[in-house]
Amino acid sequence: MSAQEEFEQIRLQFVDPIQHDYEVIRPIVLFGDTAAERSRQTGVERTVVGDKARRFVLGGMEGLRDGRTEPAERHGSAYPEAIAGYIVYLKQLYPPIHLREIERIVLRKFGYKTNHHTLKRFLAPYDTPIQLEFDLTTFSSYADAYQARWRVVRMATEGWNKKSIAACLKLSRSHVYTILDTFEREGFAGLEDQRRRPPDHPGNQLSLPFFKEVLDLQHEYPRAGRFRIHGLLEQQRQAPTPSERTVGRAMAINRQFHGAPGPWIGARPEQSDEGSLNHLPYRPAYRHHMWFTDIRYLVKLDGSWVYSICIIEGYSRKILAGMASPHQDLTAVLQILYAALSEYGCPQVLVSDNGGVFRAGDYQAILRDVEIEPLHIEKGKAWQNLIEAQFKVQLRLADCKFEQAQTLQEIQNQHAAFIETFNTTPHWAHRRRDDGYRTPVAVLGWLRGRMVEPGRLRQLFGRIGFLRTVNRYGFVSVQRFYIYAENGLSRQRVSIWIYEGELSIEYHKTLLARYRCAYDARTKRLQDVSEPTLYATPFISPQLELIELDDEQWVKFLRRPSRSYSRRIAMLPQQLSLIDLGTSALVFLALKVM
Image (cartoon, rainbow, N blue to C red; front, top):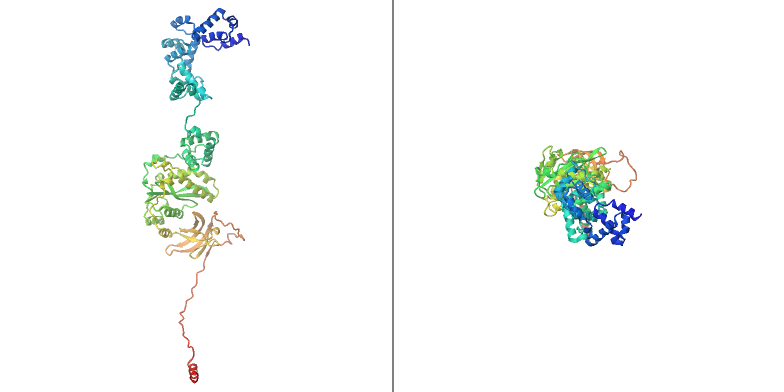
């Protein structure tokens, strides 16, 4: 491409006459070309080219400005073509821009003095009722942060107001002030990307390993929110855990890019605990002031419901005892009550709903004997029972695992794991405590309620429950009956509960067997046992049976025969004589002769 064609291409990019004049003389000043040669390349008179080069050498860029045309142009309302186009561009780029701001920009960019009155007359024909936004590159769209900051500085240098810069580039005004202050203090070095944020800044913590940790917990607990995920991270991480908000950002990114489950929305809208806390009729004031208990439907297994039965300490929200049971009867309730009382002592109050098991005579009698006041919430107002809020946590953390379980044992294992997780992770009610305790275990600490002698507890619960040792054949002896429990628990102590015609055998809160029975409460004698139901448990003996028996051949209970006591006759001792009378006389005579 010849120099003449190159100049014609560059001329199309000029927006200022000074740019044209400088390009005309640039080869003369920099490379020593002659004015005649440059005149042939540009089509400008040789004398004009020489004059412009002379004025540039003497006055620099300011010498290229033709001052002869300025007075005539100032008195008119028209602007040079380049300036007029730029003024219209500014107004369309940012319609709210002030006229005095345009005046300042034009002066700094072109060295052209005008005033806001002239600008107002000039822009009057260009006013439009609706101005569409230009597709301008915003601050956040720059791939290079240095270029984005330099754009802010350049606009400020051109005369833009800081408010206008923030609006055009869509960033905060305080950020504009920060960039300009840094540039004024440090120069171009201040525009470079210098990380001064602390090590625990979210930008440093959102790493791939951290995303993986959060993603694994999101898949394991798909219904948990950022508060619960943050608590679970604190439990399993040795390093300091990022803030809850940082965990929330990681969860959102995982949902967007890594296939994490979305925010869970329940079938019924959840009520905020804070909204109803002021209306709770039973609010614990200190540790072991109030306990709360209830039964919750967990999941259907083989067409039958499995229930969660729990007791929590109201002040610390710790689950004191709990079990997953296929029955919601009094026996199951008394089992967890016995476990809680023997481990943590007695509270002052035990709150429950109006279910039949919580109004049963034996349940009420035991509470009265240990001096616990039973209280019941109003019907139809489940939120008055503080344990309902904890069941919502169970809904989010454990229900998905309950639904995937195939056996009762898996459900019971998951239930026990949930209780451990619930007690050892931060609770929402403790997030503002002054002592720094956040978990139910830490809040309750070592404190116990009013203790009851173990013998006294066994005596109270012995009305319907007692302990027996399993023999080597897997049977337990209950009065006049041998009843099968589990062959794999030989020489282990199991709990036996008798209530409302049912006899249950349990080991470590796991139901082994259930029988129908006839029990005389007046004489406290077991009359009959029938209808055995055995459950699959992990305590089965690894020893295979030599001969497999079916249900008819396998005797699961056996009545011992009654003992027959024969009547004893008293036999008085009789002293026999050593020698009779005749023999004694002969012996005497023989001794005398001798």
